[in-house]
Length: 292
Ligand SMILES: [Ca+2]
Image (cartoon, rainbow, N blue to C red):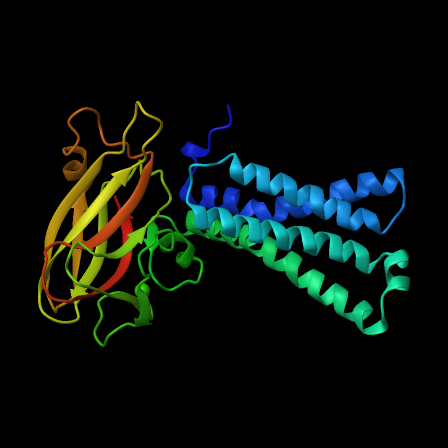
C-alpha cells in the first residue's frame, strides 16, 4: 500500500505541495477529454467544475484533519485549476474571439501567475530536499534560503536570521536568533535528513543573548503506524553569553530507549526549547551538524 509515513519530512512536503500541480494536470486532462468529444468553450467551465468537485470530495474524505489545512488545499487546488485552464484558454482561438483585447492580454498573465503559484511549492521543496542531502552532515547553518524549508514545519514562530555577532566561533555570516518565554517554548525545530547512520555526535554552537538559561535539546526518531512509536531523547544544557559548541553523543541518545534502540536511520526532528518556566530567554544558535 502507498505509505508516505516512511518519507523524509521534505518528501511529505513535496507530496502535499502536489495539490496545485496535480489538480492543474487533472483539470487540463478533463478539458482535453471533453474537447476531444465536442469542441466548446463550455468545456472550460465543465472541466473546472468537475475538477473542483474531485478536490472537494477528496478533502471531505480526509476528515478528520485540520480544517484550515483543507481550506488551504482547496484554494491551491483552485489556483492550479484556474491556472491550467486559463493558460489553455489563452491559446484558444474560440475563447480569444469571445473576449476583449485587454482581456486577451490579461488572461495569460493572470492564468500563468496562478499556475506558477500553484506549482512553485513543489519546485521549492524539491530544491530544498536536494540541497538538504548535499549539505549533509551539516543540518542547518542559517546561511542558505533552502534551510527555511527544514525549520519551517512547525506551528511555532520561526527564528529570526541575524548577522553573526563579533567573534562568533563559526565560519559564516548568519545565526538564528529566537526568543521564548521559557515556558517550554520551542526556539528552533529542525527536520533534518533522516539517515544519521555512520556518524557519532550531534553538535551545534549556542549562546544566550541575555541571561544564562537552561535549554532542552530533543532528538526524536520517526513514529510509524501503531506498532512503532517515536523515541524521544532529551538533554538539558546551560547556555551562557559566551558562544560555545555543544555535543550530544549518539551513545547518550541510544541509552534513552527502553523498549527498542533509537533508530538513527529515521531521525525525524531536533528540537531546541526553553527548559524552565521563567522570563523571556534569547537564544543565538548556529551550525547544527553531525560529526564522526
Ligand atoms: Ca551560520
